[in-house]
Length: 218
Image (cartoon, rainbow, N blue to C red):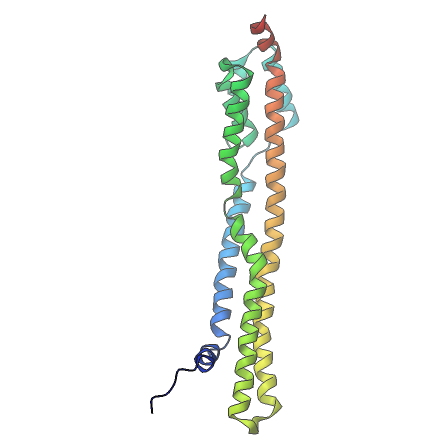
């Protein structure tokens, strides 16, 4: 007689693959997480922040209507988002206050994509790596009890050895998730600081150009 299809048996054969492939998956994910964290760290370290005296000098040049000097000043800091957004606003100065605000808002939105790059992967790993490890542990426990069923003489030693190996997957899952969560929170904080400084620079730019707008409005 033809053997009937048994879904339980088929799934059991899949689960008996054990935890080794899950461990390799977690190792690959940990390498990805580390690579993204290192790249993001390098990116944020290169994001130079303007010193207070530079901002005051920039504001003073705006008040004296030395727009060329103000542009040259911020151009000396090509890695600073504050400087970039100030230069973007100056380039749209002739269009008035509305043009400056729209141009700087659009520029910051485009730069936000660069700031957020890769963070979704860290967030995903931080949330799901423990579940992947737990999945590996469940597979290991299933295999341990199956081995006990096929080798009853092994007794509890067979089960305990299998379970101890299975728990490694949970530990590795946590080992992947915890650094990913820490890195994600740290980079989110850096993004908030950088974005706040950039917004403050826009306000400084508008305040420095205030007299120019008022004179045009008269």
